[in-house]
Length: 597
Image 1: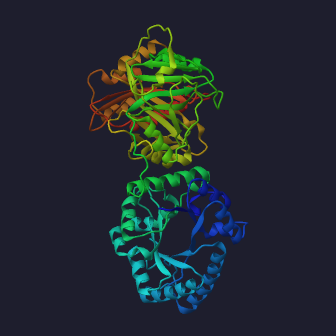
Image 2 (image 1 turned 60 degrees about the horizontal axis):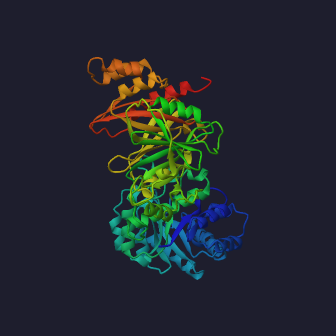
Image 3 (image 1 turned 45 degrees about the vertical axis):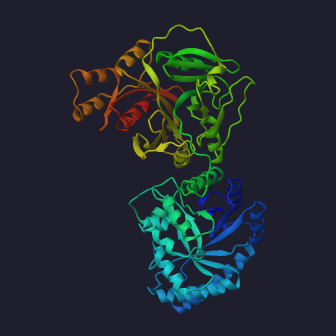
């Protein structure tokens, strides 16, 4: 189906919004009245600009407080409407959105509302305009879609139809099944938005917290199914009011928006991109740094050995068990930063995984490689992390390990690391919801509930995405504030079977762990019962502890180098979380260890 987006969903001046929408692949736009009023371009110039970009103007919005008012007020409303209709002729827009009235002058009289909307439609028809009547969830007398449809049906005019908005319908808890009783040709427009499930005033909810489909808690796909079965043939249009989107760059926001519609259409069998290829494990994590020594020392203390080197690039392979870390000393953005640049994901079919990613608008990354290097497809996640689709040591597929030459190395005193338990990526402040949708839709990972974690300087939001068996776990988080670069640390968690032995070996090798306050262990003693000496051992070694209905979790953290720190985790009995209960203690301790404190 055709796709459209309201200009209010994007930031910046109107011309930037139009360009962003076109580059993201939208077919049309809804022009929000404030965007037109603030533009230095004439309506004719805006019409030409949209046409040059390959866009249509699918809706002009909104007209407010029109119907069910005293006659003298309605006469003034018709005068105002006629002015807007002439303006729309200049714009080249043929449909106007009329919201149900919130005016204190409006009366609860459906017959009057229908009669006045019919007169409005007669005037609109003379200008070649259609009127799409929408029920606002906070409308004074009309606040449900079925009520709005009854009024449209009673008015009985060919230029009058209804506009359905998923937020207004689902926020009120209305049953969308009744949409199928509306003739498809009388649904003049469809606006789509999701939202997190929140207990708050519906107007504030709508104006500040809407998000793109798949990023909230509404069943937008279910609603779209009812609309399609009703026979709707118009565009799928996004109308999202969101404080974060209004401050973010319009270009990636528009791509995120278009991706949400691709996924929505896939969920309702309206589109068939390549099916998700769910990753089956983590092949490697790649760190970049201008100076390999600090990272090498930390990896060595953790029991990793430098086992191979890339034959044509300054990249070393460090390994312990099935955990592989690539250390890249090539060019970096910041001269002082060790950072996580790339993740290799084991894929049953790397080629199809790459096609899926490209179909969902993930940026395909050009890769400099020698002719003999393994062909690896990579895309960029919203935070810039490179994601490689790998098939490690699979006989029928090329393996990235073939690009590395083994090096002589002394046997390392390992710490029992088995593999990578999870990776934690801190997202830019304005891309948290985009990241969750990206990893779920592009990679086929399951998104868990978002949690808030107390930081000494604010709240951190975190959401984990996983594959079914937990062999791929990625924790996405966002810092307390847009400018808080200290919140941009990333970390890699390694799985061990015996964390006590591992920590003792790390200490013997000179590794530094984050110290844990004594108060934490006093509280731990009050919450749980331990075997004799167990809690004392945790206190001595700086090990944190958590428990859920499935099992137990023991973990600890290394010092931070650049933007990276490591975590050791021991999961027992099927524990499913990430120790969120302990995160405030860890965050406070890390802040205390920062230079200058």
